[in-house]
Image 1: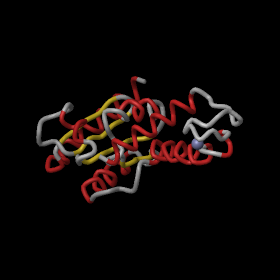
Image 2: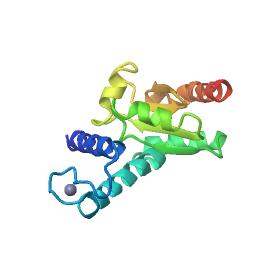
Image 3: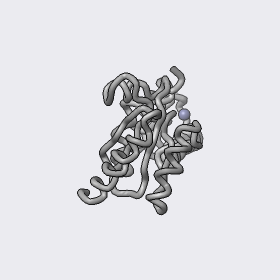
Image 4: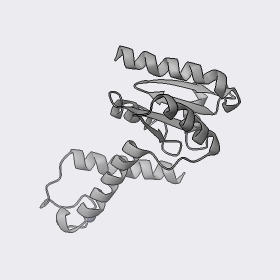
Length: 163
Ligand SMILES: [Zn+2]
C-alpha cells in the first residue's frame, strides 16, 4: 500500500518537474512560497532517489536471488546485476526495461506482494523468479533454476545479438 502511495506521489512530482517549474515560480504545494525556498530540495531528493532505484535496484533480498546472481555473474562478468524485487510493478516495468535497454544491466526479482501483478501476467502460477534483460524476460520457479538457467542465458545472448 505504502508503495502505491509513494508511486503516486513520485509520479505527481515527476510530472511537475517535467513541466518545468521555474525556481522563482510559485511552489506546486500551494504554499504561496517560491519553489526554490519551498519544495525544490525535497523534490530533488525524491528525483535522485528514483534515479538511484533505477540504476542500482536495492540490496539482494534473498538467498534465491543471491544464487541467481552468482550463476549469472560467472558468465556475464562485466555486467551489472540488480535486484528490483521491491520496485517492480506494472508502472515501473517499462521504465526499467527502457532505462537498461542498451546497457549491461541484468535485472532480477523474486515474487512478493509488491511485484505479484507482474508475475501473474507473465507465467504459470508457480513462477517466483523473473530475469529481465534488454526488453525481454524469462520467469521460472526457483526449484527449476538449473534447468531454467540455460533459457535465461539463451535469452540474454539472443538480446545481445539482436539489439
Ligand atoms: Zn512547496
